[in-house]
Length: 470
Image (tube, rainbow, N blue to C red; front, side, top):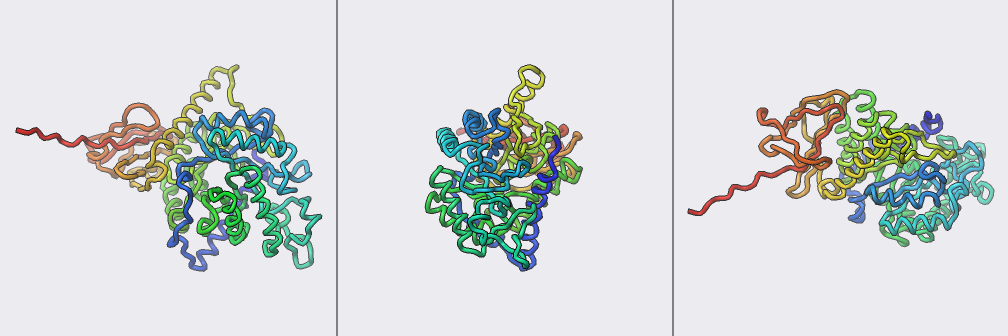
């Protein structure tokens, strides 16, 4: 099923808004990279996010039906469940779930208030945190504010309701009553339902000052609330947000793996983001979500998995979209019920592939959850002889070094990495059994990688020489 034009337009607009803000910031010579990002709870560095789309996650297509599947997410190894929008949406049968009619009510298709409470309770028992998707850039045309508080909207010069990109009515953030109404809504979900965080749709389209106000109010309820901005606005993490989307990283990844751009462009994108954002800023790394065609359709099974190996070894917060761990290829259903095919016992070949893919994802989560160098370690880029195809870097923490070499192309390559083979004569593989041994003749680390092949291994230090007493 192809992704609809409206979905593509949402994704493109979400990219354009923060990009425009970055350009504006650069024009004003605003150097956010010289300032530190706000501090966050230590557990956030060990976190990973699983996006759950209610219409697809279970055969029931609602919150109640999703509860049994929370164990699957916990067993996989994720620790934050991000729920796609469940607030009451527009009455328009063709309307997007991002067209919100009531910020303080649950859409009947998703379930009831008790269903959400039970969902959150079940998640917490499994040590999962729950993040809600909120939409404050625009409202539905039939949002209850339109009747009750028409002054809450931006007006055009001729007195009409102003509309944004999609186009939907724009709340007026210059009005203190609008700010209080929306902040109170966030507090309601956090206080009354135990929600642990918010993914803020088109966060860069809403004034930063509002998010700072919201953060201050939420801190009174739970100072460990997680705020994820769907934006790459550089000042987000100074006072309001904990994590940002890495839009440019996603685009660079697709240009490399889908369109044939040189692999080193991903490194350049990373370096640009680090030069733009506050020191220590955190980003999600993803190759699949509800706004884009499924990664397995764009990159193939092996390519999609390799992209996740990259996401799980970069510094930041890895992110997967429900069904990605079983190679689900269905486009995101806006309103229809399109359950993910979690198993296929009638087809032994596909069933085996599903089981193997899920096991591979569990290894990814287990690797990251067990290696502090991948969560709180530094990232050091390493040059190699095949920059058009191969990325290479080290994750380092203390005396631990994890070498990552990824062939992002669909052809076999022989690559030499600019590391002395005397220091990296072999690595202990972290995503499979045994060791990877490197060539001795070059003086540098050299490896033969199959198409979409990789090496992710912990450095094996030479044992110190034991001197004998005479």
